[in-house]
Amino acid sequence: SYQIDFQTDDELGTLISSFNSMTRQLAAGRHQIALSGDMLKEQNTELEKSRQYIEIILKHISAGVVSIDNQGIITTINKAAESMLGINSQNILNKNFRQVLRDDYLSMANKIYEQAVQGLKNAEIPISTSISGTPKHFSLHYSTLKDDTDHTMGAVLVFDDVTELEKAQR
Image 1 (tube, helix red, strand yellow):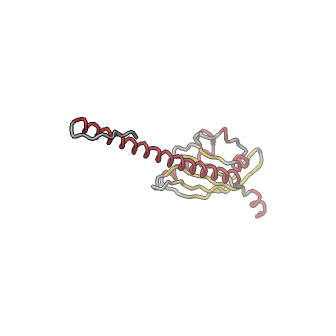
Image 2: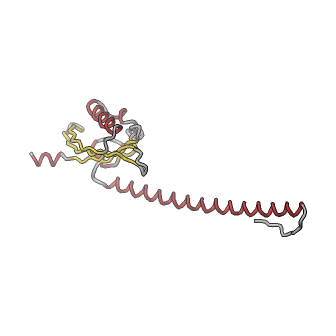
Image 3: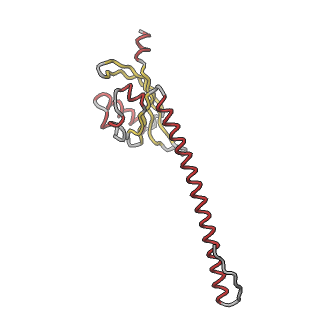
C-alpha cells in the first residue's frame, strides 16, 4: 500500500509512477484474494451444514439407504440399512458392490447396474432373502443420481422391510 509522493517528468518520474501503479495493483489483488478467501470459507461452511443435515436425515430415516458412485463403489450406507441387512458399514464402505455381494444378489445387482448404464432411471424391485436364518422381504427402490448438468453421478438404493406387511396380507 506504500505510495511515493514525488513528481518529476524524467525517467525517475516514470519509475515512480510505475512503482505507484504496481503497488495499487498489488493492493487490489490482495483485496480480491481476501474477498475470494472469505467467500470460499462461507461456501465451505454452507456445504458442511448441508452435509451434516443430510447425514442427520439419513441417520434417523427408517428406510435403508445405500448409494454407489459411477464405478459401483459403495459411498453411503445408513444405520437402518445396517440394521435391516445385519451388516457393518465399515466392512463395505468404499468397496465395489461386486466385492461385497455374492451369488444371486451379485447377478441381480449387475443387471441393475448394466441397465442403469444404459439409461434406467428408476426401478422398484421386490427382494426376498434370509438374514441370519430369518426370512426377510424387502421393497427396493433404485434411482439414478444426476448432477445439474444431467451427468450421472451414481445411484441410490432405498429399501423397506415389508416382511410384516406380507405376513399380514397372507
